[in-house]
Image 1 (cartoon, each protein chain N blue to C red):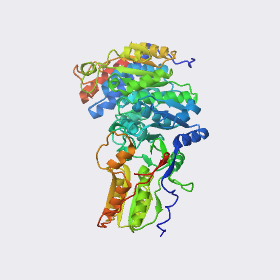
Image 2 (image 1 turned 45 degrees about the horizontal axis):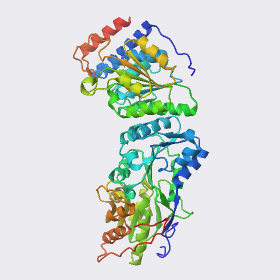
Image 3 (image 1 turned 135 degrees about the horizontal axis):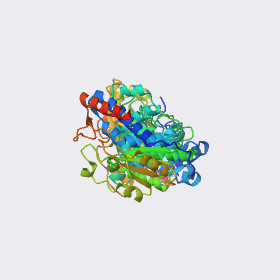
Image 4 (image 1 turned 90 degrees about the vertical axis):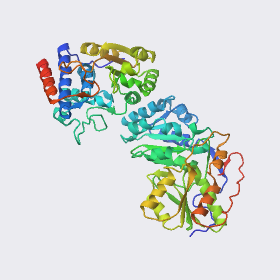
Amino acid sequence: MAEQTALPRGVRPAPYPTVLKPYGNALLELARERDDVVCLSGDLTRQCEVDLFQDELPERFVHAGMAEGNMMSMAGAMARRGFKPFVHTFGVFATRRPFDQVVNSIAYPRLPVRIVGFMPGLSSPGGPSHQAIEDVAIMRAIPGMTVVDVADAVETRQAVREIVDVPGPVYLRLKRGEIPVVFDDTHRLELGQAQVLQQGGDVALVGSGMMLTSVLQAAEVLAGAGVRATIVNVPTIKPLDEETIAAVVDTVSGVVTAENHTVVGGLGSAVAEVIAEWGYACPLRRVGIADTFGEGAKSGPHLFRKYGLTTQAVVTAAWDALGAGGPPPQAPDLPVAAGEYAPV
Amino acid sequence: MTEPPTATATADELQRFADGVRLHAVRMVAPHGMGYLGQALSSAEVMAALYLTAYRPEHDRMVCSPGHYVIAHFAAAALTGQLDAALLETYGHEDSDLEAIGTERSPALDLTCGTLGTGLSGAVGLALADRMLGHDGRVFVLTSDGELQEGQTWEAAMFAAHHGLGRLVALVDANDSQVDGPVSSLTTVEPVADKWRAFGWDVHDVDGHDAPAVADALGRAAESPLPSVVVARTSTSHGLDVLPPDADGHFIKLSPELAAAAVEELEARRG
């Protein structure tokens, strides 16, 4: 068993440095090498970091305007002609609005369209219309859809190359703006694999996307209270790495999932399915948005606090899952300088 | 813009082809007692003009946007030899690739859509891809007046015109028929031709049962640098006199007796 004092495998200490446009740069690098990569944007070109693509490769850039249904159906048709279309808009407009087109023009024909949805969950203070809180659930329900929710800039860069040759469609969920660098250079994202970043044995903390940093912090807080947490990073929510998750569940007394998404239909539900179908009787707590819509605000971190997407929520859930009794340990506030990132 | 020469056909050849579409469609629907016969009756002359004078399967793309119109495409493809005519007997039956509403399994088409309003976007995507690939084929897409109610049609129309997709040709089967009744009684889609014109398209508004007129429009469409649309004014009962006047054009009931009379009428006319 690893020493609890060491950092989890491949992880930097918090607070994390941030970078800009890791996705946009990675896509451009890929497109320089591959003529079949085309880029579509639904009037959110800079916001989705593909202004870099537009500037350098305008002949393979398609401005589809504010018409997401048309954009998805066009992308499917372009994939039929041998292209690998990467389609960009905010997560809400990539899933809710053109759902029928994603299903019928892309997924049912199993076409290699990469749908990239920015601004996951409550990371946007823009209110319910702009907060993709159920995108993972609805994309996960589509047969043959690969669903990826990465945690940081290192995974973002690697994900672009991991998904380009997937035979069917992919939904890639990306944070917008300043992207934390959580992992060091030894980290490798492999599509379809969950990673055990730390062996603990008391409780499993299973996180994806922006909630991975909360999981990492929560593990430290729990360690201070004598609870050894196994940390599992799940960038690929579908197809889920059931074997790794089941193997972890087999060794712990409680499981906590953490996702920047409604607790209905996302990572928490997927892990619950594994626990039930593999026949484990293990307490599960799902940290996420509690089957409610968000709201507009001034900042995303405020909403993360208000809706329970915090380190403390993960700690409390673990405490509860273990039936530890007494008040849970308290997560300290992490001071964050400009240009740094830490979970709330 | 230079176009490879397209075939010509006489009015008699076109009419015989159109009635051949009708005859195949009657035989495909008859075993089921009801089906999408009206769509074949209304689009028969459009199919004749398209398949005999414009569409080159090795070079062009064919999209059937309203998936229940695949019956007319299957019939036309059987008449041109693109599809084994014997397969038409399996139309709509268990385990057949010739499903009544088009799917990925539908033969003889590049794209078809059961969910209406998405086919024009697909055709636009194919045309855009062709341009990027330097391929000079045309993309034909059948759509219908009822389908114009789907807003995505107009998203695609706007995009196609802005990007000057001159090799894209839409054919609107304007048969004034949708599930709940005549299109004109439910949602006014007129003026259809003016709408396409306003969206920046080259528009040809023709009698859709005048096959030479449709063929002429397709020929002129090939010369336009704009995306083109042929608005074909049609009826779901055209060319089959034995149909009762109150037949439901969207989903026609076809008793064995009526089917036999229909076959007799069409065979007599085709000679």
